[in-house]
Image 1 (spheres, rainbow, N blue to C red):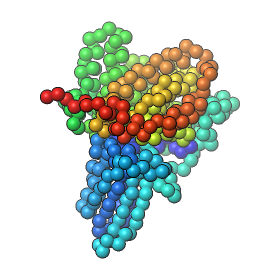
Image 2: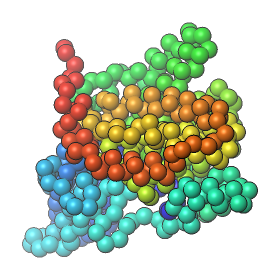
Image 3: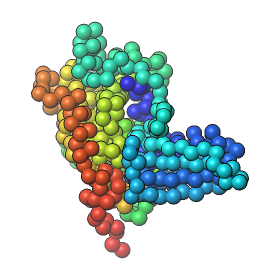
Image 4: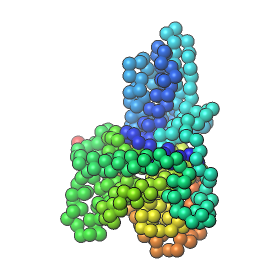
Length: 401
């Protein structure tokens, strides 16, 4: 498996696969063809179907500022390797083709092409959680210790930066009001949830706090703010909300949170390696489901759970999102995405409690759920995989004015 740095991508929303990935691809292509007179980009499948709402064109245009550029959209055409496909063309002044490049945005800001995968080298000797649990048990170490043993020393500093951005996105989101950009005119709710929650008794106050933290990050993402894809932009509110909740309610210190981020990243890495975190490929179960698994694992570790209780908690996080479709209304990362982040955060806290009540033994392993999630996602019709052609996306959710 590659570094968990690839699970935590720092950047601007609203989508890791539709905004971050295309931006990264555009930057690489431009750097290789600085002498070209003009460029053309063709977007296929899911990228074309929901690209306008996800600001895909704006991300690419920003990179090619000062250069002649045309963008073509082919939502009905899917290339074989992945639903998020792009083709870049660079031309000389006489229209002679300099380079053609087919590239895929595979989720979490990662991109691949038909020949090489533009990702970091593999740093983990194991690919399955069962193998990792066996190794940790044999060597008497925790999951976060396994991460730090496998990764370069720079990963700790990177995770500190990740946490700084996560905290900032919560605080920024809680301070802002008004409608989110896009045709839905969806009002921000994070601040009002937080303020109202101060008047509740402790159980309701804590729940409203958790909701407000998840809403804050998701609303920042929807408005193009700076966030951490964990593992994607559309699911970026779940893990930070749970970690910030444990910091505020249970006084978790920063070193503990950094270790929890390491463990959470390990579970996200396993999903990405053995299945997919791309909504266009497997639906929202791969995005919010994975984020819930990561947050569930982090929460259980912060509460002193064993490696087996942590694995159980993460397994529930993914299992209970199986079959979740990706059907964004108007192609925006707003409805139902924002609410899903809030409820996935709440589920993660519940999974933590449930797992700690057990001894960590259970019938279905995390690895088995990852495999099932991938098969389920492949079986979903394309209309339920981030194309805005089925499910909730077919509803008219525009405001009545």
